[in-house]
Amino acid sequence: MKRFGAVLFGLALLYPLAGLFARIGPWRWQSSATFDAVRVSLGLTAIAMLFVVALGTPMALYVARCGPRERMWWQAILLVSVLLPPLALGILLSLAFGTHFSNTPGAFVVTQVYASIGYYVLGAIAALETVPRSLEVQAGLLGHDPWSVFWRVTYPIARLGFAVALSLAWVRALTEFGAILVTAYYPAGMPVAIWTNLENFGLPAVMPLLVIFLATALPLPWLAHVLAQRRVREARHA
Image (cartoon, rainbow, N blue to C red; front, top):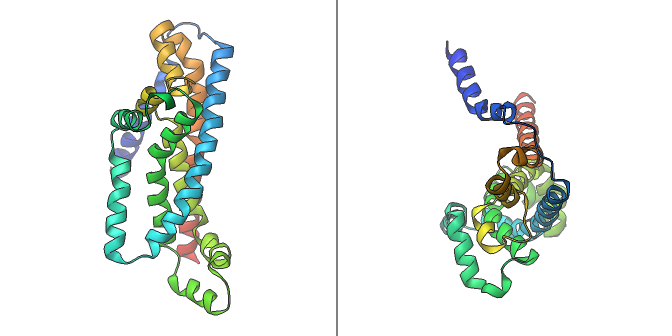
């Protein structure tokens, strides 16, 4: 009975995907506009992730290794960035940077970084907390510098956790709509292009880009989660 209830719950969660098979008439493929939106989203999100990893990893290391009281304050600050409503974030960024920075690739990337870096840092902190501190100390006593300790000890143990954190940041940045709508309506990424297609041409013009959007947003975090759970099971049975 419990399994039956769980199956019903799972089917209910997946039910929105049934909309992909709804009868809405022939799909309209706008090749040039669709390609431009995909190129903008994937290219600029990849750049944003470089900044997220470069800035977020050292911060995660610092927060994971600082004292409990200080860590509590840093995590509270990170939660503010995670909980800030997207539309409010876009308005605040637009006011902070000024109109000269709006509707540029730079504004697109900066908005994505602000929208996603909190997810990455908090996830990376959780990954780092799985690394036994004693192993890092022993590696330091054996003569390894902090950089070497990270790559030889810390990262191999926490790498799947980092992958999960990065995948969450990726999907958060890629799917950002509210903040991007304010700061970088142009160049139009996939979320904004889907919205404009819906307003201007209706659902048949939305569906092709929507399928691409789902295919680029969902697999990475799903795969990272599956691999992380597999590693947890293997560790428990080791």
